[in-house]
Image 1 (cartoon, rainbow, N blue to C red):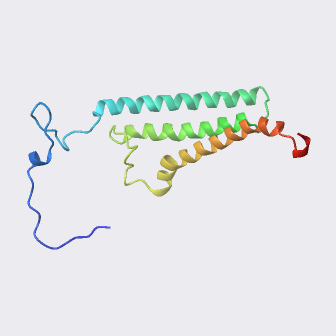
Image 2 (tube, helix red, strand yellow):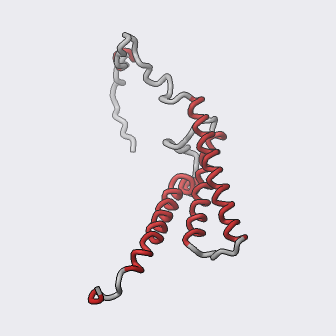
Image 3 (spheres, rainbow, N blue to C red):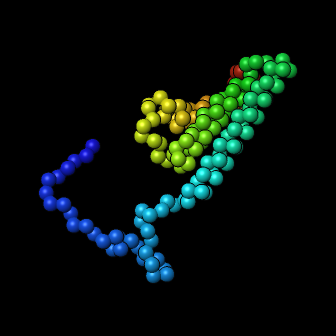
Length: 156
């Protein structure tokens, strides 16, 4: 919410007065450059997109292997691989979209022209998938512990 106050405009403060001095005697440019150069940001975007695409391919091939060797279709392994496949697909889509957005990586500031559902799907839903994968992993690891616990306390 913006509040505007009528009155005279504030006096412009020179930029040299606002910039902290550096040890060499110069000043740091406040808004002239980003913290990370564009070429490094593009290289990191490419690296992330390739890593997520490799994870997607690995999970996809593992799911085909389960189907080919006639393993149980509904198991901890298949559910975990499916969640991993969906997560990697969404993250690959997000990081490859950085190329269409003039080479900048919009992770911290999503584009304002993105509608609600694509924004939720690309930025929020992967966190839900990670939480689901963690819960599934907890269930898988807790199953042997629950099998070893006696049903009645008096049997111990």
